[in-house]
Amino acid sequence: MKISRFMRFIGGRDLFYGLILLLLIGITIFIYAKVSFIFNPIVTILSTVVPPVILAFIAFYLLNPIVNLLERVHINRIWGILIIILGISGLLTGLILLTAPAIESQVKDLAERFPTYLQQMGQGIENWIQSSFLAPYYEQGYAWFTSNLSDVTSRITEYLGGAVEGVQNVASAITSVVVAIITFPFILFFMLKDGDRFKRFCLKLLPPKYRGEANQILHNMDVQVGSYIQGQIIVASCIGVLLYIGYLIIGLDYAITLAIIAAVTSVVPYLGPMIAITPAIIIAIVASPVMLLKLGIVWAAVQFLEGNFVSPNVMGKTMQVHPLTIIIVLLVAGNLFGVVGVILGIPGYAILKVIVVFMFEKFKDRYNRFYGEDYGAYEEK
Image (spheres, one colour):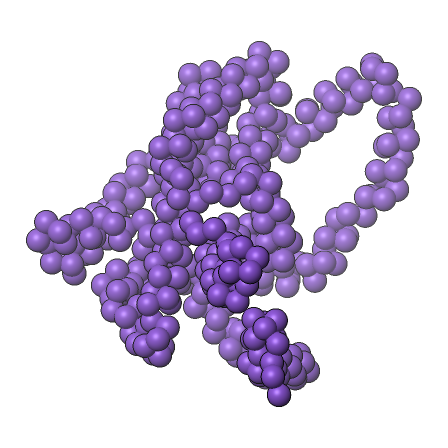
């Protein structure tokens, strides 16, 4: 039987084999959903292994260029890795020892006084509302709040499953964090030492016909994810330093703590800075309107420097993503995977984008081969 050009274009007989494969995959997923409890040990193992591996990957992209540089100046790779890990560990230990007392006192004081700050800010907003045109609606809003959210504490307790289970969850989370911090340096060491060897091993598992394309995909993923992680951490660190200097200049309380919060949250693009400025705004509002104005000037100056000098030079043009796309990715990833999704959403999008772009290039080549002469070919890059 003669196969039409369109059927050959979409795959011919291979299409039917592909549909059968998808059907088998669907049946497998259905069966897995029915007997998922069998795989609980695997889930436990993955939940234990994944956090240190993610930390090691982030550190790998930060340190691998330095290790490569040391290797180019004839320093043995293993010695270079050990020098970098020990040097960074010593530097971090020194910074922690120097700054820990100040940070600890600020965090304790802020934790004790923050409810008071919220109460004072709420009282100020209430006084302003009652003296403004919104006064008639205040009582209605307050009544709705008390009727709908008065039992929020009991709801939270019920959601957490009681105090004992909540403490167990916190203890489990702390244990996981400690295990991840202890184990990830060892994973990082072997990633830095044998990363290229592992990549070559994985490529050799593929048929020779596909190794070149697979290597190109992995290279593009490496460039995209590596540049994003390196750039985002450098930008976040610069924001933290600039804000710390600005907070010191204007005399804002808890300068170093607020700057660290800003640096950590700024790792998440667009949404992070909005989260970072919130505690500083609350403290500035309670302090005085003048302090709030000073905070606005500092924040605007830092955002100007970051947007016009830091990000363009650090991030470059290796990852062209529209801001609206970033926001949508963060919202979807956060809704699906929580905090982990917010942090890893953009790198995951970068990996998916590389795969989609590769598949689209293959589609264009196939279209040009079957229809290009009759209807016009896709333009090459």
